[in-house]
Length: 306
Image (cartoon, rainbow, N blue to C red; front, side, top):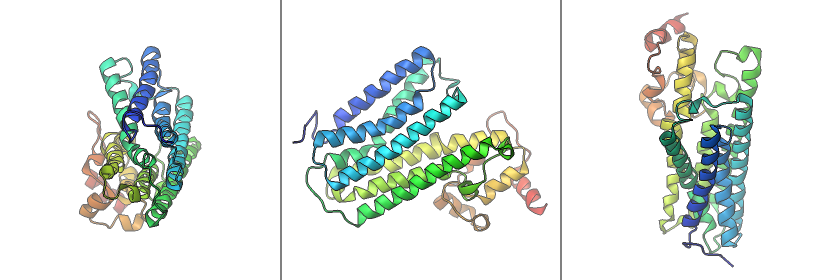
């Protein structure tokens, strides 16, 4: 029998639990100026939302079980990988400016809570549904997309990690394996997984306000494209390798997110790259106070003629 807490959709209780989860780790991070728990807390929040709503509703339909398992698998892999990475690094330089700044730290953890909650909307709203709906094409499509996305994210992370520990990977950008066809195959995988989770829940959203679940993949893409993830990754790479013409040539020939053959991608008109491949001008910007090795177009012309 379903246990109703605050509201029949478990939005309120899930929000409270996720807020409390992030608040506890915020206190640890601020008290000890400690970065090692931050990504772990964010990654595991999705498992908490999925499992909490599944157990509260107690219907255990096939769609609910599958989506819950998929979210928890992604969450566990992400949290585990990020925890291993920060333990290896020792410190996360993203927090250099906010580690001891309480207002900025509060803003960061508040945003992480919102990330947990909004991106979890599909699994929350699917798990709170109390009527059986047959498995159909949307489920199969969504689960398949999730599987493809999980492959790209997991394999991409492993390939980049292995590349960076090799002698030839020191002081250069990763262009091996999946990274030869996408500058961010791991984030492509994350986009695919959460669009897949959303699509798998479509039979439950029909004719209800539950369509608000589409905010999940949209919000995720906005964060990774413009606030964190890809935006920060491109800025960091530009700062490190912007003086090398070969780097700009790699950027021109390699898709930003969606994997695509290099030779063909370089020939695609810029307007098509912006619309369908998320290749925005901001990703070619040098960090403030940094200098590259000249005009980007000149660099590309020089490297192509050499």
